[in-house]
Image (cartoon, helix red, strand yellow):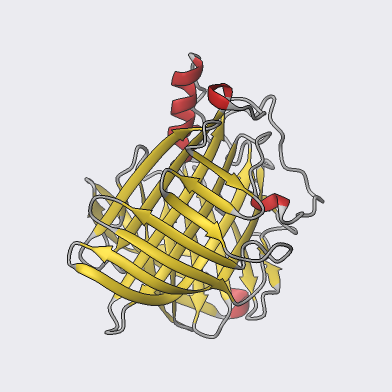
Length: 357
């Protein structure tokens, strides 16, 4: 996420109630709070797999974040989201109820008419939620992201994803057709001019098969998915109020990750152009240009749901449209997250996340 996701704010709130102390709410939803006692990202660190697929309890926040653009045999479009967040009371891990780790899961399915959302919350250390690097497994209650790769192989190359809720559910198989991609400077992703940063890598090359369970019945689907892995201790500056984040699958085979962190000025942008073979090209500062095209009233507020996204140096100029304007995550800390399509200099599909509106 890129900086991902505002739901971490709920974990910050939970940490406050569990610890009996008052949280310092700076930036958006406390994500600009001080990182005293926690590790902070430093440039020059290289990822080590499979260990980095697992948790990093000495950092304050972390997520395993998957979005999928899906299609039924009749051409009907859908979106699916599965996210597990970890947030720490203290920079350590422990067994049982003494664990300082807080876990939260979000799941969603989007159609052109509906946006189904569910949330799960857990304390760490008791087995209700967690992540194991190898063989890879991430879970909260019965929601699972489970690795199917053989020992010694890339643990993110083959995944089974499940979630169930009152009104929806899904079971998806994700098979990587390209490599893991470091974001930013070999995985060191800067978030502000003041130097806040995260460690960030993606797997944007999943081919998806599976089924959705909806009130209208089960639907077989295929499509593409994007996984983001990120951890940090202070990803926002105190004057940053939220972000607009795009993950785009171009019909030409390339991918684009781009985000803008909003402040009182023009904001801070970052983007990575990903070649069809997986080679990342971090783009220069301010290379990404985004501007709202259309707003909609969502959950009682005006939110920009259609955007013009440009990278002038590459001749990239597209306009995005959401599958459903009302893709509102009505979770403990609400935000907008949903599938989009885009047209212009190239066409394709992707996902948009917006926080702080």
